[in-house]
Amino acid sequence: MSEIAHTSNALVAWKECLNQIKDHVPFLTYHTWFLPIKPILLEESVLKIKVPNRFFIEWIDSHYKPILQKTVKKVLGDSGRLDYQVDQEQENIFSLDEETILPKSAPVIVPKKEEPAERIPSSLNPRYTFDNFIQGSGNELARAGAIAIAEKPGDTSFNPLFIYGGVGLGKTHLIQAIGNKIIANNPRAKVVYLSSDLFTVEFVEAIQSNKANEFSNYYKNVDTLILDDIQFLVGKEKTQDLFFHIFNTLHQSGKQIILSSDKAPKDLKGLNERLISRFQWGLTADVQPPDFETRTAIVMNKAESFGMSLPNNILEYIAHNVTSNIRELEGCLIKLLAASSLSSREIDFELVKKTVKEISTGRQINISIDYITHIVCEFFDVEENRVREKNRKKEVVTARQVAMYLSKKMTKSSLKTIGLHFGGRDHATVIHAFNTIEHQINDDLIMREKIENIRNKIELSVI
Ligand code: ADP
Ligand code: MG
Image: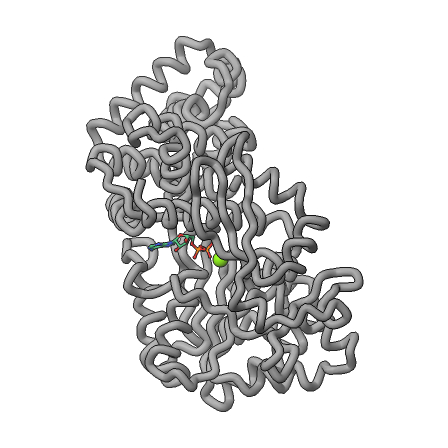
């Protein structure tokens, strides 16, 4: 394999490690100790990484060894391990004076020497651009609004821009793409991006060090404020108050505010009403799970950017079976790449099937027949009890059969168990329902879309 392939595999493997680590360590820890690590090379199952200085190695080794080892083995297999290397260039920038950087208790962000304040710099990821954001029916409005704002921040009626929707559907990508575009158009623009989680942590730290005013002034003076995952402010009264004032100041002076959330403003229970009403002043746009065409376009695009050349039937197979969100589509390709480079094996249909299955069974554990029934009934507007009775009304029968079909597809329950959940019907009835729906999916495009829609709803809520 060429040097370039080794490097891109390293990037992909490390990205997958980061994805997993991110959910298991505090945000600051992640930023301080994991994001600065650079993957260099993946050879066999050894991932070579570059860290800013020797102290980094010691700190990581003494504090995060277990999670690192576990993650690396998960991503690269049992023989997977890391090989550290110190980045000579960076070592000169970082002070190695332990007094200044050795965290006493919790790790803290270590500012580079030349940075004047302790403020964390806006951490826009240059990878997120409009160019590599695929448009689909689920994100048209959000994308159009984002592009308009990127060209004229603060100068459209879309202020704030509020994007909401389930996990892995491109919210972070989109709002960071706005930031990147604004900076590309005007490198002097002060664009700050951060997660609401980090915003809260920073605020608490500022209060503790008597710098609350300074903190608030800092944010009141930006040109564009991008706050991701605003749902994290729920229940945090003080942070909400502060944000309210920042919001007003920015809005009054024509500065752009961009927000994302997992729910629509009105559904953010526990958030101050006055904030909720302000969130609705501008443009509120949702992102929905991608349809089959969009998924195919995304897999093709991502595969290309990972340097994978896969035949169309494999790409379509993935797009057909990994339906819940875009992060999983990406995850599937990363898994494939890792698996094939580890076993020096071509990505063939067998491997793809296995990987897709792993991804879907990884999720299935949490899905119950009752939950499926609940979502199906909601979708067809049928009372849940009806499907458990001997009701032969057309819409009830459809809901019952779809619920049985999805229970078979999405859980590991036996036909008998499924039958029991629907008023004690026998396994032959379940098989009949399964076959009926399977046929309808093949013959009827609308039915196929409906089932896909319901499936997405079920999957999204259990990730
Ligand atoms: P969210 O913030 O909604 O949870 P992310 O923005 O983190 O989702 O997206 C998850 C992953 O999927 C990211 O790697 C992102 O680049 C990718 N992604 C999401 N939507 C798209 C899209 N429309 N086109 C290309 N990549 C996308
Ligand atoms: Mg996000």
